Length: 388
Image 1: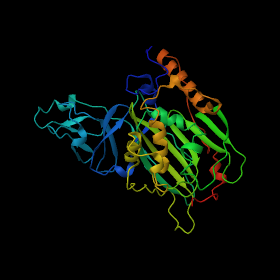
Image 2: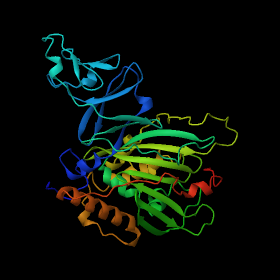
Image 3: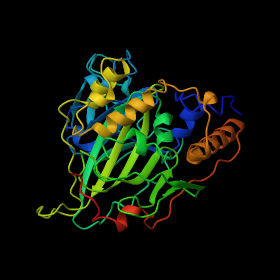
Image 4: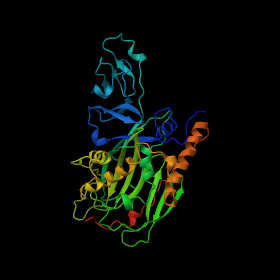
C-alpha cells in the first residue's frame, strides 16, 4: 500500500500517484522528424530526463539520461553505430543499456555496469516510450487515422505553460470553444451552445455536444482515452482551413509545464495533387512561437485581443492564456462547477477513483479501446465550411 493524495493530479514525479499511473501507459516523447540520425537529444517526461537518439541503423534508442560513472547526461555524447559514448570519460552503452567499453578501466568492469533502457516505438510521426515497471502494455493504434485515402497528416507539438491536467480538463469542456476561440472560429458561425452528454466507456469518456445541426452547428463528438489522450474533430481555424480529425496527447514535462503532441488528419484540399497514402507533413515552425505571445499576455505586456486574428497559432494562444490564467497549478477545490462541466466532473471522478485504487493496492480498471473506428462528427461534414 502506498500513501498519497488521490486528488493530486498535477504532481507527476515517479513516486507520486499520478506519476505512477501515467507511467503505466505508452507516452509520446518526441516527433520522429526532430530525431536526426546520430544526434542524441535530452527528452523530458514527468519530472525526469532521458537520453533519446536514432542510431545509424535507423533504430530509436531510449535510455536513462545520466551516465552512471559521474552523472553527466549521455545526450551530450555521440552516437557510434547504435551505441552512445559519454562525453565525459568515453564510456559506451549499447541499445540495451549495457556498458560495453570504458577506456580508462579494467576490461572486466564494463560488464558490471548497466543502465535502464526503455521500450520505444514510432507511430504516425511520433516517438513513444514506456516508462513504467514491468512489461509494456500492447501499443495502441488508431484506425481513425489509418488507411484514409488521400488524407494529409500533420504532426505537431507545442508547450503548454501549466499542469498537464488543466490541459486535459479543457478537452472535455465543450462550452469554452464559444468564448476562448470566438476570434479564431469567427468565420464559420459556430455559435450555438450545446447540450452536453458524457459517458464513461471502456477507454475513457465519450463526450457529445448536441446542437441543432444548422450550418456548422452540428453535434460534435470527442473521445478522451485514458490516461491523457483526446480525439475529436476541430472546426476550421487560421491554421487549418477545413475540419480535421485531431488526436492529441497532453504530456507532463514537469508539474508546471506540459507538452501537446498531436496528429491531425485533414481531407485533401481542392486541386491539391494526390499524396501517397500515409504521407506525413510536419507543420513548419511558426514565425513567432505561441509561447512568446502567451508569456507576454500573462505578464500584462499585451492583450489576447492584440494578437493578429490571422495568426496561424491563434487557437493555441487562446487556449494557453485561458489555461495558464488559472495558475500553473490550479486550486481545484475552489472551483464552482455547473451543469456545463459534466465532462470535467466525470474526469476528476475517474482519476480520483483510479489513484485511490493504486494507493490502496487494489485492481485498477483495464482500459481498452475497440478495434473499430470510433464515431466522429467530422466524418459526415468533410465538405462543410472552409475558413475564409
